[in-house]
Length: 226
Image (cartoon, rainbow, N blue to C red; front, side):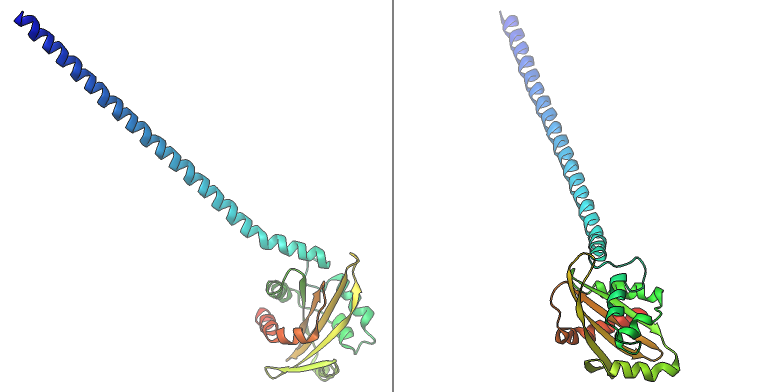
């Protein structure tokens, strides 16, 4: 009897130990599974965050290009640095003679490489409903006096940083998109170059507003063509 009781006690002890070991093993397996699940979830989260960041960066990078393309179509801008076809036609129709400000700009030969940079800089400084077409054309030394006279004959003259700057509001026009447009021509002479820009807007434009913005835009223009 004693031997049987001792044997039963040993058997029960073994069963209990086995059960405890199985429980520990099960707990360990469950813990490992939970850790793997957390790791995989974190990996999925990190991948999702990375993908979202990449998509966000791509959208930010694409936004300026999309805006620039939309503005190019809205205002009929060409791919080069020359004045757009609508603006050329506008200036030629407004020019009373070759000595007028519009005639002077229309016949000027522009320097393409620097104007591409200037156009990018200037249009990055204005809203989506505004476009600035820069002017940077060499002039003969003998013609400097005539250029100064033409600029001096513009309706509004302001001295900005010691330079006489002429402002002229152009008559409204309708582009091929049948959208009313207004513009202001801004001109000055910097040594042997006729410098300036035409600001075009799809809404009301006031010369006084452009005069207020002129110092900032002039600095951007001149820094881009140096």
